[in-house]
Image (tube, rainbow, N blue to C red; front, side, top):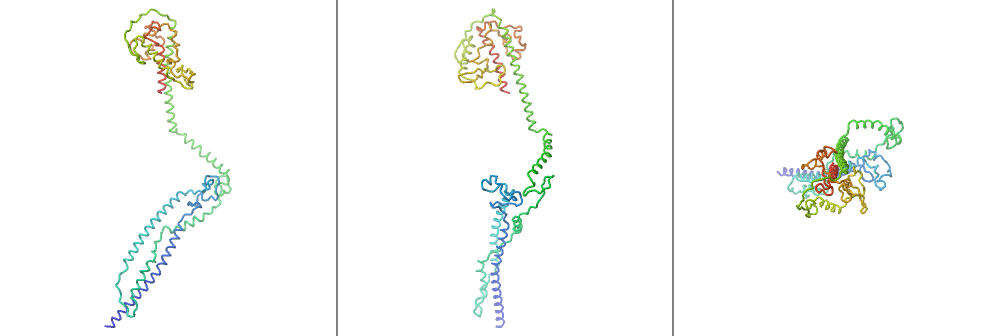
Length: 435
């Protein structure tokens, strides 16, 4: 029995010694492996960087800006002492966006790696089996299982192996590609008739070849484009033509109205000229008017018979208190529509309608009339349009006659010539302003 127990104790001691030796060997190999992973990661990160210029901006190494070796000395960048605008990479904005995206992905991967480290440590700690204290050895040595505690202190110096990134495996190739730009092979000038070699960083051998090819392109492409442009009428041109037609129609309508109104004025002028030689004849004097009315201008009470003259005097007095003028005469004044009298006091030209201007019109047309001469065809007591009033043309006296009262004594038709002509001219000005 003693032989069996001694044999079992010997087997247990040998197993404990073998486990302690394996734990110490694993502790020594892990730091070196982590160091190799770190060096590989650093080299991969360095190789993934984009080639940059001295100003710190990324460059593609393949565009015309990257091929230019010297500054132009003429642009704003050269004048300010910064990067030459002609040496600026065409894909700079795209490369900056890619660099920002790569930085964001790297930050996300770091966060993920830290989380994975914690999870791996927790899983490793959970995987280590917990064993009870071993039996003391007969030879006085320490418990063989205590040798297994060496890896507990070694965990503090251990570094977790970082997972290799597949995306960074291609970085060294791209780095070598950008560090050593391609050697540009000599090529022929692209001008069809030229057989010379093109200049460096150019497609032509000289400026003359470039200008010659540009002229040939214009002569080849421009006539076709012009023909296509004028083949169909542009929408803007069509709208402009429609607007011009509408404006022409409005101008025609205004011209027609102007001719009609001016024709009415000439009819009255001919009629007044014909009636100047007529002297006063017998007429029926109207009865006395004994009612009183208020003036619409000043508000005073006046006799109904004298009301037209009183209103005229009040209007003239009020109108003279206001000035209607401009520093320059009117460019268009058909048939003396506006007064245009020059006022030396304020250096202006009067813009009132001439026949009702309270300051300058003196009644030149009707002052020579001896009688009123108002056509009785207009005094039938009904409203009439201008077309009805002048339907007989200059023959305003047809079968009706005229007022035979002296002009200065007729209160019923006071200044009818001036009022008629002014009505036509005001309507003419109003229609022109409306259009």
